[in-house]
Image 1 (spheres, rainbow, N blue to C red):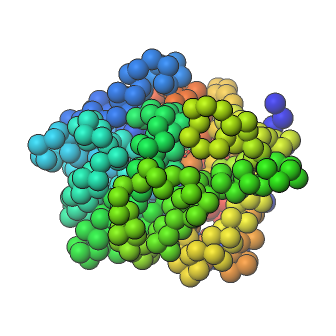
Image 2: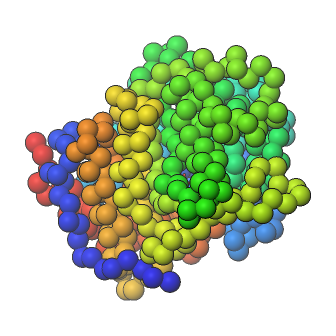
Length: 457
Ligand code: FCB
């Protein structure tokens, strides 16, 4: 498999970015904390992982990086790195472990201490409320297919804001509604592991509804800097065949436009609606105004591109089948093509067509790499090259006037990469999953160097 050329340091300088540009790292609760600690309740990721075949090597997030007990050391590493900000998520199942609605004080205290610990170290806390661990008792009543879950989500949002709101730099409702919907309810690759067009279609609508409800609840408490985080792939037809253009249009509509258009315009794209409207809840149109409540900012997660052609329709596929291809670019350990240009292009496309003056943040970007710990070093030059290329692409978007305010690297440390278990290492800090020891990689040191030099005053 081709890898990126080796590169010792970043070509970009901190001073190439606007003065107030924010550099941070991202993680999520289930991937790092350890779901068996501190009175955390069971989530659908625990039960999904407990069914053999769903996660590589039959692994799960019960211990993960044990960030729940090691958080102070992790925060120190962030401070030494010179980060301005940290994007983390709170675990709903940790906060409200049982159906009785009682808050787990120990869980809330954990996030309270975490936020204070960040502020003490000069790092701005950015909270995501839902990064995928739905409490099991809500999965039992149909999860996101059930409209009531949106009300429970708004209650949970209120609890978090009442506890932490005075100290948060921003709040996102959802991380990657596409994954919550399609990857989890249609492709069956994430919890709850369904392959059901009706389940996926209802989720495609009821997640935005839940977002709207949580936004309203948080606004009512006076909370500011509210947004949502969406994932994007640069999507284009594989070849000149008109059927490929059609397939790419549908794929792009599902992947890039459904949620973006709902949140910013209160409309779903017709290309997708034509295929799934029959499965949406009755009177779905009545929800659109609340879904499109104004965003203070929007997060963009970007990793790769996809090339699409039409597949043979066959019995059992609810949507016209499309095939995704590689196009000869270098690939990461996830087998994702490295296409940095796509980041800048997508940022411009989002701004021009949807968000206009609304501030944007790159909330995730990074690569999985075959990182080897040799002695006490991990020489992940490929990651340095990957990040550098994406920094350059982001700079191009800034030059074109995109109001891009922040960049968060995925991820601070190696962690539980969902259905890939611990096999795929995305961190700029290496984690030994036996000893749980942390070792900063070469990319960490390169970033540290970039951030500490020429810091604008
Ligand atoms: C994103 C997820 C994040 C991580 C990265 C690699 O889709 O938000 O949790 O899995 O991909």
